[in-house]
Image (cartoon, rainbow, N blue to C red; front, side, top):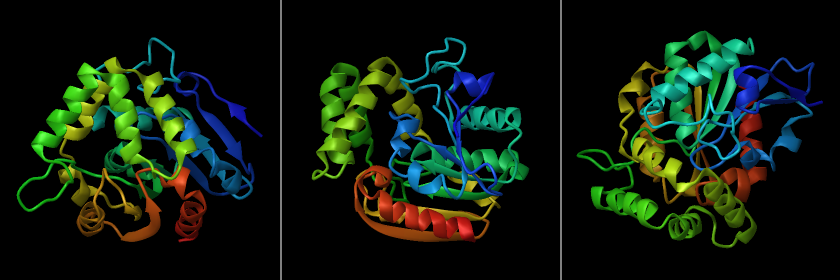
Length: 273
């Protein structure tokens, strides 16, 4: 059964679906350039056993409420998104949930768990990174030149960048998933993508990791162009609470699209812990 919500929940298109009798609630949060439909392959495999909560971030092309839509002034850090997550969970009276955050949402969940730990039972961090920019003693995967070029491409020819970026981020053998990501990026639009990309790719959230006490599972594809394996190892090492690292055989930044059966297997194992 699908239950519509109200207030902030309504503005962010919250969907509650799955087993009403389940003692476990799993919140699924999408990342940059996508919306809650990014989880559509795994939702049917989880709904018989868990209560699922899905929503769209304000930057998503699926959010149309003018009072909620993304603005660069408000969302100039991951903390602003973490505050939205806390407000949403408070409005819905969610406590001790399992939070699965993909890409930028992984760190958003970490920050929210530091601010309000009672809301979280477990964090599942899928392709997450606290910092994308390389620095001394840390390999984030991108040089300053890489990020400057990325931002310039978004600003000067967004449509071309969408097709180029999606071809790198998605398994080249999966044309259907690549097209889905392209359409989602185009719905978000370049005016939103540019300032949001600056926040994502220029931020440094490493300081939060040593404050995260909630048990975590880090899920990392065997090859991810956006997040190298070194970042997954860094997360597992620096997070203060118990943290397990699970590597799944998959190519690209979106295992929920290109390796969804493997992802579900790891998710279910993490939910049993």
